Length: 293
Image 1 (cartoon, one colour):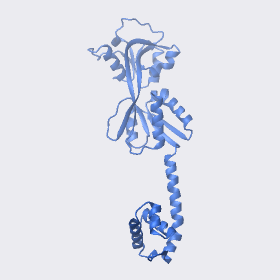
Image 2 (image 1 turned 90 degrees about the horizontal axis):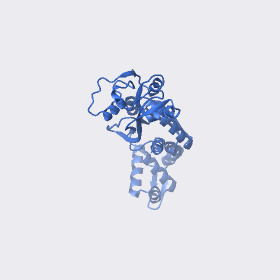
Image 3 (image 1 turned 90 degrees about the vertical axis):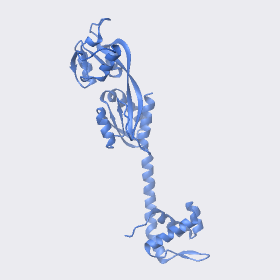
Image 4 (image 1 turned 120 degrees about the horizontal axis):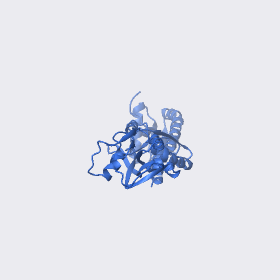
């Protein structure tokens, strides 16, 4: 098939075939009349056939022009309908939104928020993946996630990052654990998320800026806040955790907060930089940011 046929050719041809007037078609399509003539000439060159008979006072279709009109008109109309349908679907707030989130914040905060968004936009469906921060970043780049919630600000090319929440970080222990005001924090028996638990290390640095922490008493290491909370209720250990992760246990009196200097940790929403963000994703991001204010 010869190259060079495009949508503009068809649009101009069908308009002139309907109006049989180049000036009227130029007005209908909101383009200059010479541009209409150029498109028709290009289309005739493509088919190597005359499409219109032109005289000073009249424009008529040639036999080939009539045949082309019969063949192309229903196809063009169907194409327009499908394009409109695609545009409507692209701009409609329906379909699946894939979200990557850290486990604890996903269970405690994001899942309840998405439930509220679902109530407002019932045609949306959500797939919430509870993952680690580096997994969220990787899956976003691969296009498998719509956006993610992470605990570390990410400054990368083609990535947008917004701070959405400041979490209060607290030192907690079992309600039954005996405590004194004179306890040295670094000597306490700790449950940690990992050996270099960032929340624990930041907490200790705030309370002892010049201290060395090579001999922290780590009684238990487990990479789950939920598991840490379970261990705290069975042993006289301590942990530094987001208050959101222990809200229920504090309310029910199973854990208690040890008064200390305030510490906060930030959460960030990240998504790929795009000139035209998927409307449903854009709406969900705006709703999440609004609800977290």
